[in-house]
Length: 389
Image 1 (cartoon, rainbow, N blue to C red):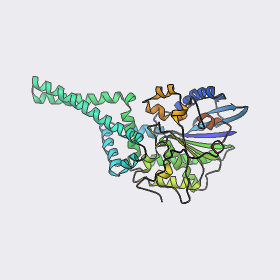
Image 2 (image 1 turned 90 degrees about the horizontal axis):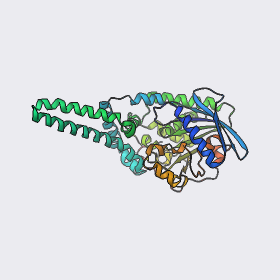
Image 3 (image 1 turned 45 degrees about the vertical axis):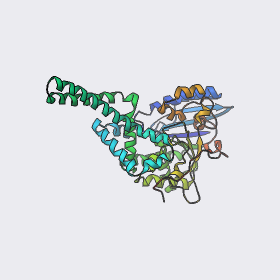
Image 4 (image 1 turned 30 degrees about the vertical axis):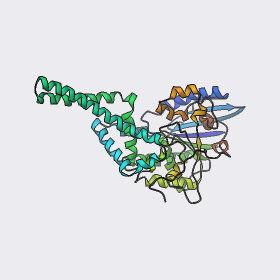
């Protein structure tokens, strides 16, 4: 089995090297737990950034070559905002979801990701309130000792200093990061910004080029926001008749409704419809325990984009409560980001979902999930106000 894996990250400004290191570390753990051999190394095609891997499972050898389709530069560019600009994003993003009615419809799916979206708004407002209150108190004390005019610049200076100090702590709080993430999605009412649309087109061409090679399977993986980017790239190939049968799609921890429920996300809704109509092998894996994704929500169905006659992904649960040991669940409790990346990590008691067997093992995606049905808890209610066609 020779497989080519094209991985599309979510909204992540960090260079792709982290994904290679994560694969090496977690893959070694999973191989030891599950009793197969996994080795990482170089690859024959040095285009872009990636790595190679081989497995030996029950005496059967398989090999894979990974490539990360990078858009971290676009992410990093969108995060270079001043503190005032970030607060401006806050109000525009809140209005994009509240004013369009998307927020209330998203709440009907899963409250976890909606609360995660509200988190940066609440935290940034609390930070501004705390800095303002500290400035007011110190300014008032100065005014008592001098004059009101002397207290005012002190209050303003402490307010600004407080906001700067809060931002320095964002490596632990993630309020600015999440604010930039949701603002990026909502900036054009759900329409792709030109830079991202250009990159999606480039991804589609890269996937087409790779699929022309001598591979048994070309596996496209989209994680988090990368899930809808993968959908749009493959939908373009489907519309131009270049979606090769060997191409399979695996979406992990998707947040598709955060974009598809916005009024101007016409392109994404069309892409969801057209890809579902084309009917490639498409497995969607989420988990209710992942508060940053729309767990078990069928991205095509909830977005009201199901083509006539049906279509869409097979919705499968990663079932964190069963596949992670009680000790590991306790360790990860409250660590939203780490849980959101669990799909790329080792499981204590893996079931049908084993990231490393899927990407480097001997079975194609279609064969591994053959005969499987949707998770019983799948959510397919068409609650989106907007739809396609």
